[in-house]
Length: 307
Image (cartoon, rainbow, N blue to C red; front, side, top):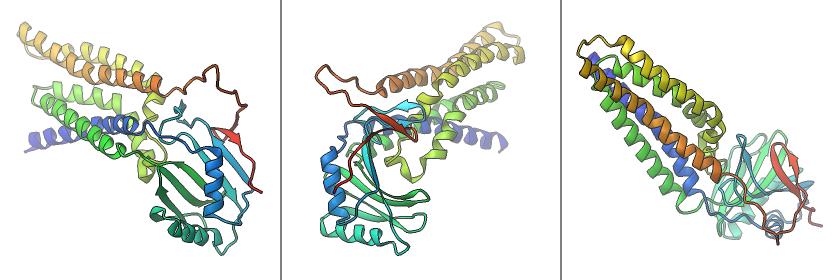
């Protein structure tokens, strides 16, 4: 019974670890191709949703910056426009936003818990509008909505990663000791930092704030760690092997080495691909160069307040 429980635990561990990686890759792939709103379009929508309200400040994000990774212009969570307002204790802007969104045909209107008042979020025509209350003030955000491929791609990536992790850890669990313990320890140590950080920031905001940059941001730490763990696995296993048959020992060492190297090599290639794809697009010769300032880790292009 104890052996069977350990095998089930290893299968579940592998499914969670590689499933988290698959979720991040699927969310990145499915979130590409969005079109950020133009400055004039964002100002027009803000005036329609909150007529008569004058923002005290506004800003436009050209390229999002998340976990040390620059998002491309067509990445979900990148380009967006924000407008900050002063609202009283009566939460008047919240009620005004709700009425305007309903009368103007915005879909999926739902409440967003806030600092002093509850905000709202809605979607229409490939855009997401959100009025949120925080300790720093009342913010209206206009950003691209998740494309139709986002959810299927995220689910498919999660299932594929979980299946691969369960199969790999299940196969390793059937090997003789100390193979299961060694492989489980090495792969877990190599993937746990990224998986834990991904689940910490995941929450309900995956559609708004992407979590896949966690892995490219950790790549400078994880790739050397994986190389060290691979060397440790190849060196430590023969020391703990008790069988005297040399051919059997060589076979098991090869199996352990391949199992230890499989996930790091595949993930290193995926992380490199993510990191290269996450770099912002370079402007062409005909594109105007606009000075950009930085606010709270975001590249912000100030926009004038509507008069």
